[in-house]
Image 1 (cartoon, helix red, strand yellow):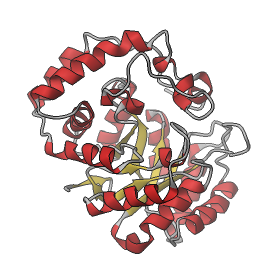
Image 2: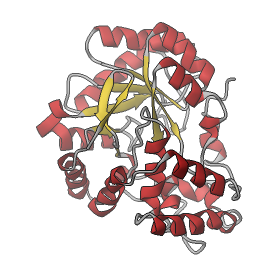
Image 3: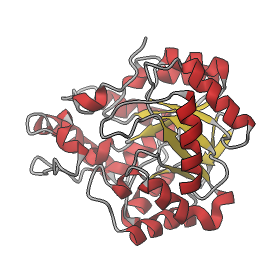
Amino acid sequence: MKTRKLGTLEVSEIGLGCMNMVGNYNPPANHQQSIKTIRTAFENGVRFFDTAEVYGPYTDETLVGEALQPFRDQVKIATKFGFAIDGTIGLDSRPERIKKVVEQSLKRLKTDYIDLYYQHRVDPNVPIEEVAGAIKELIQQGKVLHFGLSEASATTIKRAHAVQPVSAVQSEYSLWTRNVELNGVLKTCEELGIGFVPWSPVGAGFLTGKYDTKTKFDKDTDFRAGFPRFSKEFMPLNMPIIEWLKDYAVKKNATPAQIALAWLLAKSPNIVPIPGTRTEEHLLENLGASKVLLTPKDVQDIETCLSKFPVYGDRMGIAHMSSIDYTI
């Protein structure tokens, strides 16, 4: 697999998001199966793995640490801090907490350094300069190698970057979630030489074409049960996007998921998607996107066609959207 740069951090052009191995979109997967999927990703060229302390919470970092330990020096691990993890989705990015939780993440990940450490969500109660300053200290100590931000606004990115260079910004971005094209985030990353990491690059599974209006999401184990786009009201209205994508994928001898990922890869050499999966079958399908080469004209044609299909419903529920940094 080819490599790309997130700032000065070199990673595989497609990474692996490990969140849903411990839940959130489904009940937790079998532990040994998850280990096998992560190691199969490595065997197939993936060198960039994404986790966070809040996934589980904590259990996903432990899983990733165990799976990657045999070849830790050959991979890049990204994890995140910033949620209070107190039974709510409250935020806590106080410098003293960052310095405490990084030690816990290092222990769970079975490593003495974190390649990329993201602030998971921007904490409105802590100036971003203080957060960046805390990460700068951790970088000086060798515990963290690169600084990242997740779901941050263009203004916040610039303020953080002025204190400690930001290597990567992670936000939701896909064929049906393109707000970062409009709010200045992608432009800011390009101007400052910051890499961009789309999470949910296949639309939380929607862009795989494997869901339909009969699909039900368990409200107790699956976040998507509370996402407006997946509601009974809006799911039928969003199906034309999938029908078009399926037809287009056939023409390109690919799957819908591969087209969604190939589109992101073709948008910019600074973009590194991290599709998440728990099965080897879906993993290998996703990695096949690196062989689907879309030309600039293909990208333009896709976007022209997609403009005919409005997206109905917000990308996440009210509680999750409340933690997004909308500062202009």
